[in-house]
Length: 364
Image 1: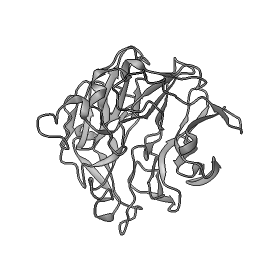
Image 2: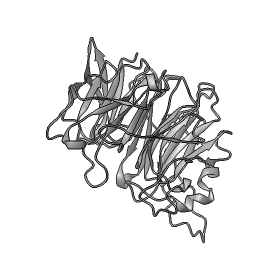
Image 3: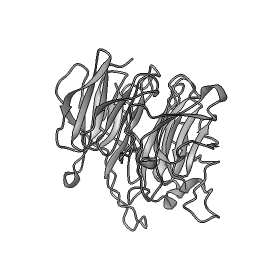
Image 4: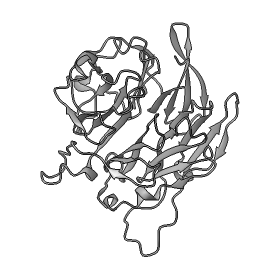
């Protein structure tokens, strides 16, 4: 069970601390600066923070275990675009959208997903980064396009705890991609997904899918959950094939999904109204949880402690997390609401309603 959590927000990185039976806001870092995502590395206690400083570019900082000070380290950077390239994408890092640690057997290895769709790998705790050219150079990248941003981006990176060379990443909008050799080669792996925003003929094209978020069950690593633009999906074979989860209550649209760390049949979602509104359904917040007893094919809906009138909070891709105990959940919104549950989502406690817009939450 964690005693600390982190909120990456438009105006800094904030810590939450467990105090007795509740949680309280603690220290802040980079106050006033946009922190796109943070990574508490369980392997050695290091904390990483990615900043998006607009005109001054993307920055990355590291704080060692037990330390109080931050060190600026290298940020993922694209190579120069070859002369005469017909690639319309600007080869420039505009955002670190995903930041993940390598496996327990890979000390110092980090992965970063960026806009405009590049995956980077570091083998030295972020002191240097290399663009994973095997994925950047796939022919299908020419079909990728932006979802919420003008350019495509990698927002989900799932390392297999059994084999660190097996990694699944998700691109909006570019589908799901898998490697089994540490990134030397990649296979598009969105079979079963559907893109209703496309014309009928290409709507099952693997390379144009918009998985909003993909996450892996730590104890059953072959099980992956996906909140997609057009619904919810689950894979039982490491993302090779996907099965649609139908008849979801409230809404099958949303951005976030958080799998139970030990139960492959349980995951939490934060439903919302699609496209035009991007608000909670009926302006009332809810969290849904799959029922483990029927293999995750039906849901329970929870509202206790969540605002039920005039609520317009949107929970974004990294805005929902579950702790290793499987009972403690943290949720935050782009309107600055923060909620915690200590009973697996059955009920929620408001931590704050006045935070800056929250991009990502994490236990650590």
